[in-house]
Image 1 (tube, rainbow, N blue to C red):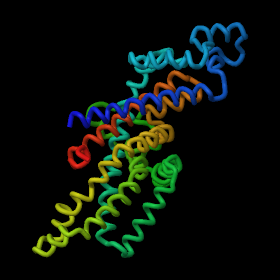
Image 2 (tube, helix red, strand yellow; image 1 turned 30 degrees about the vertical axis):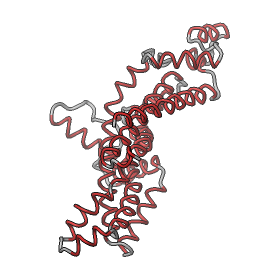
Image 3 (tube, one colour; image 1 turned 45 degrees about the vertical axis):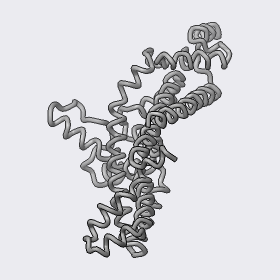
Image 4 (cartoon, helix red, strand yellow; image 1 turned 120 degrees about the vertical axis):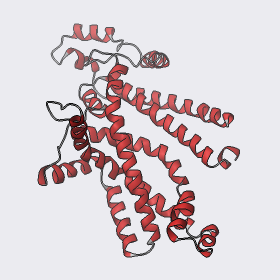
Amino acid sequence: MIGYIGSRVFLALPTLVFVVVLNFMLTHLAPGDPAYALAGENATPEYLETIRQEYQLDRPLMAQLSAYLGKIATGDLGFSFSYRQPVLGLILDKVPSTLTLVVAGLILGTVLGTLAGVLAAKRYQTALDATLNVLALLLFSLPIFWLGLLMILVFAIWMGGLPAGGMTSLPPKQGLAYLGDLAIHMVLPTLTVALHTIPTYFRLTRSSVIDALQEDYVVTARAIGLRERTVLFRHCLRNALLPNITVAGMMLGSVFSGALLTEAIFSWPGIGSLMYGAVIQRDLPLVMGIFTVSAICVVIAILLTDITYSLVDPRVRHG
């Protein structure tokens, strides 16, 4: 087992380095000069040159890349142009807000998608199965930013009762009232992230359960008189959910990127809002830092998924 984990970690490191290098190159090849964002549009050429020298923007691209990789190895993600603060500290301040939204949306989407997939498989080739498939396809086709805007339009503007943005009311409440206010503000962004997740788990669970229902052990379980609910949830679903473990790590990247867009739409004070401001202000160190932290989170999630799957199914590590 230790050897398997070591091999997965060894394979994850080059992937992470490649993503960081690609992120650096794409960010620096984008049009525009970060010096203008720091000095202002009306800055003199002399002042612009001073800014470039101060932030080492005048160095060759490969020299900047080498210095950036060296800083990352020591945990230094650079200094934000716009906030005048260390990038790592800015990101860590926003992590709890984003993590709250991602975890809540992922759990809700996984549960609803899995239950809907089981229901569709149980009612295979019926009107209910067809209806759920159409709804899943519709949700899969909708961009998450459009889905978020639709949520605001329907539940915050037309129906009312739910806040259209923010994490808490102003002024912030205290004690249990704060938790209740936070829960109300989480409804629409969490539901948006969950609806973005549901189609993947629905289609995967439906397909796996349909295949499992035709296996010999399910036929045997029915033949000895076990109740249909016991057959479905204790025997069939237990094996059918193995592919869901595999897709969980990959889904985290999709959910995380979706959460960043959702934060911008709902003014949720997380990494997404921080990223939006960094892009507008051409704050390259902050943009690259957010991409780097996101890549690290996704790679770690995929690594943990591989390890979890190997524990559930030992054939993976012995194969």
